[in-house]
Every structure is written in structure tokens, then in C-alpha cells.
Image (cartoon, rainbow, N blue to C red; front, top):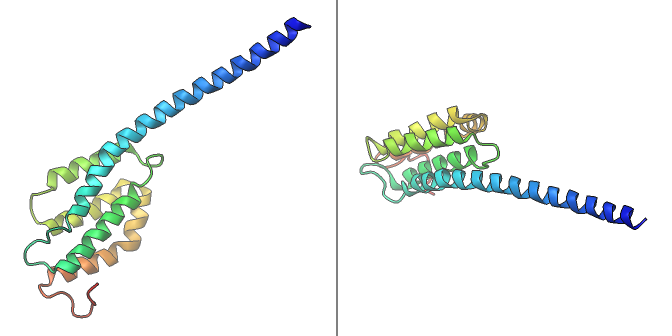
Length: 154
């Protein structure tokens, strides 16, 4: 009977070791995906948010800031969780953003952000269809030199 007990303990230990090894492999895979996601997600997110620091000349600062924050929120909502985000889509968006950043009109970059987020994923498409009118209202307000008199400053 001692051999049967020893064999049973050996089986339990082998199962526990196998499960532990599989968990370590899964965690390593997950951590690698998280690092790849963070390397693209965070710099782009911060760059979008930094656009509100210096409103372009001729644009209403408070309305510009609101339009940038709407764009930031759209980005975050579209690419929030790496488990449901297509990393290729995130990489394409980041590369396109960096390519356009600093070139042309900043207001056009915000419009490009919304256009691209709509194509990036179903989640982005839903967010854009729901909130683009609010973003557009703030962008239109920013483009009018004195702001929209119908819209209270926030």
C-alpha cells in the first residue's frame, strides 16, 4: 500500500507542477502582450492629451481644450483593454498619428483621430457614432474666434 500512496502523491505533485507551469506560460504571454500594448497606447494617449496645452492661434482656448478632451476620451474608449484590442489596429493608429502630428492644422488632426477611431474597431465605431456630435460642437466653437455665444464656457 505504501507504493500506491507514493504514486498518488507523485501524480498530485505532477498535476500541480503542470498547472503551475501552464499558468507561468500564460502569464508570460499575457505580460508580453501588455508590454507591447502599453508601448503603443500610452505615448499616443499622452500626445493626444498634450494637444490641449497650447491651443493653436486663432482658436478659442476653452472650446479647443474640450474638443481635445473629447478626442482623448474617444481614443481611450476605443483602445482601453488590450484583451479586446487588435494590436495591429493600435499600431496603425499610432503610426498614422505620429506621421500627422506637427504637420498641418491641429484641428484637422482631431478630425482625423475621430475618422480613424471609427474604422479602428466596433467599439470605436459605437463611441464615435454616439459622441462625435458633441466633439464637433466643441470643435466648431473653437474655430469661431470668440467661441460660440450659445455655449457657456466650461
